[in-house]
Image 1 (cartoon, rainbow, N blue to C red):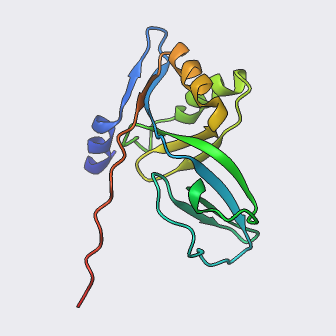
Image 2 (image 1 turned 180 degrees about the vertical axis):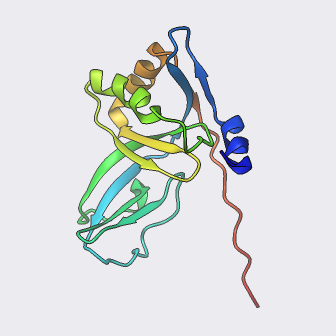
Image 3 (image 1 turned 135 degrees about the vertical axis):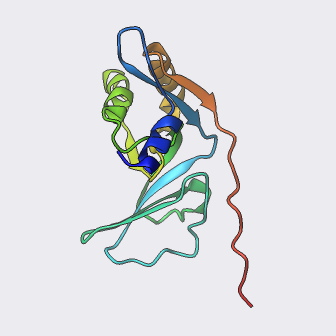
Length: 160
């Protein structure tokens, strides 16, 4: 493992329960999110704005956005509202079983999910009406769920 990966591994927020299972800390974000389906190759619309989680995924067959529900026009194909939970990270790329340990309790509770991975962590979106149930399912498995304190990213300075 490289030195950079060793640094990331030491930052990973995972502990082992007494039965050897990995436990994680999840941060629950208060903002309501939507998952939006756009046509293949679609431009990011002007109404899409940054939120606690803003994601664009483009494939040959569709373009998907995750953004604040307040931004989504009523005639746009979307699923909403969702509550986002972020796994406190960064998570080492060589750590395995992260999503399994977090999604299994939700599957057992019959809670659907939409997941996104970033360089540092994994995000799990659950229907807003199931957010408390999801948090309780995780707590029963030894995971910690805490309210997130959203961070405003620094603004890019305009070049002159």
